[in-house]
Image 1 (cartoon, rainbow, N blue to C red):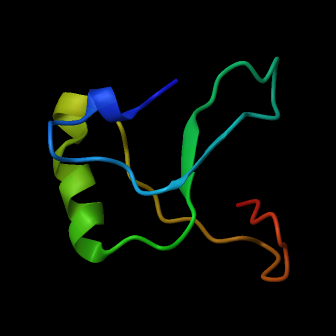
Image 2 (cartoon, rainbow, N blue to C red):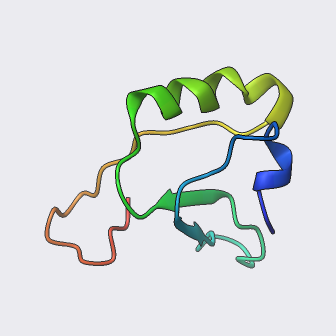
Length: 72
C-alpha cells in the first residue's frame, strides 16, 4: 500500500517502512515508520493534511532505547 497518493502533490512521506500490526491477522499496515526523525515543519504539514489524507502523524518512542528494530 503506497500512502503517497493520499497526500497532496508535492508532499511525500520520508524514507521508511510500513509496520504490520501484530494483532489479529496482521494484514493491515497501519503505521509508517520513518528511517530518521522528521522535521517539525514536515510534522506540522502532515498534521494539516489530515483532513484531506486521513493520515495522522505520530511521535513515538521505543520502550527500550537499545532496541535495534525500534519497536514503539
